[in-house]
Image 1 (cartoon, rainbow, N blue to C red):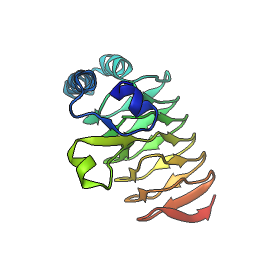
Image 2 (image 1 turned 30 degrees about the vertical axis):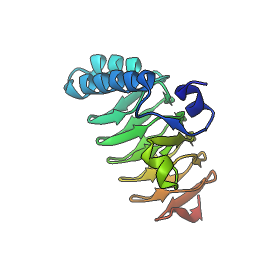
Image 3 (image 1 turned 60 degrees about the horizontal axis):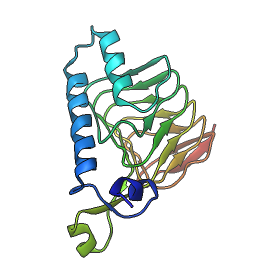
Image 4 (image 1 turned 90 degrees about the vertical axis):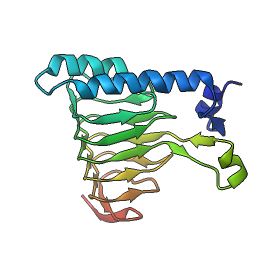
Length: 184
């Protein structure tokens, strides 16, 4: 089983020493650099660069620079997607966003995690768990979404939240750790 197959299966894998994954991360880094070098006035070129980087896009979307991701091909965005500046997606596993998702500056979506065992961690092993964001979701500034989290449809996640567990549809949630504040 390859390291990429292990990652897709949710197993511990080595992204730090595997030539295939290192090459894919380098290619994504080049694409992110090219995207981040394009001025806002080059909207059509920016869209083309984003489409070349991500696994799936809708027709109407905007990702403002700077933006960074590990691989790109594991990221899928729906229609009317907006991501503001300084966002990072560590996409060792799938990261999917529904339609009408709005993401404020400084957010991070991290599928990657590391073993608690220091010996495994020191070998460069990690795991990846998918992140799913529903439709009609607003994510406030500097929110962090951790591995394996699902945020349901029609949610608002308050600024500065650290989302460690699933959030059901139709709620306002905030805090560290993020918790439901009220139903919408």
